[in-house]
Image (cartoon, rainbow, N blue to C red):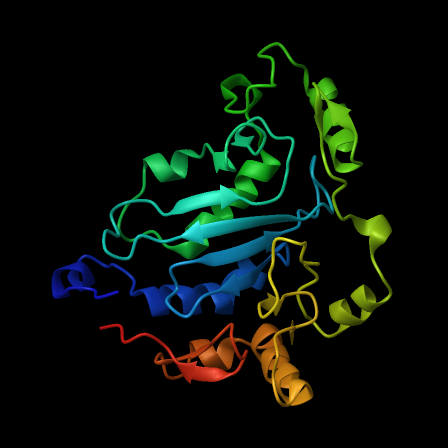
Length: 253
């Protein structure tokens, strides 16, 4: 993940700095609607969880994968939706979670992970029925029909021959969510797409195998609750998914 001097002059964020900015700011710029769910130690795969607080998809949860192109920062990252969704501009039915967002067509080298997450929030709040990517959408569908179908999809019903898995929503929340909110933790309840050993962005716990799980969980809670210390400190330190503890990050220059 080498960043050349020319790229630095052009205002290209280093991968580590870009990631730290995301960790530090994601709660504030998303108004608590997004959180980092997973990242590998090369920062070539990052997963974010988005839970809109309003709009068509209010209180539903969606996992997106982001694969930045560190070698070619002028090219947009590869972004996929990992959660089944009824959305005109996201195709999880006949494609592998591909999505249509103008940000990726207009991508510039100084854009970063924060821009991606904000773009995903925009997409969930502003579905474009007139330029559908998903094939089950009719161009003459009304907003009322769309809103009804979204509710049906989130409830696990069948639409146009496709049965959607029921999305986790506020009805299924546990009493722990109130405690998480009180402690300013992210409330994203991760679905089955997140494998063991990854960060649970809801409660800040690591579910991997460790010798001292309680101590490790306290370390991860500190990252989830207050990332300012990590983001503002030494950029060669990152949390690893294998241990959820401090390890050396890739050497980025």
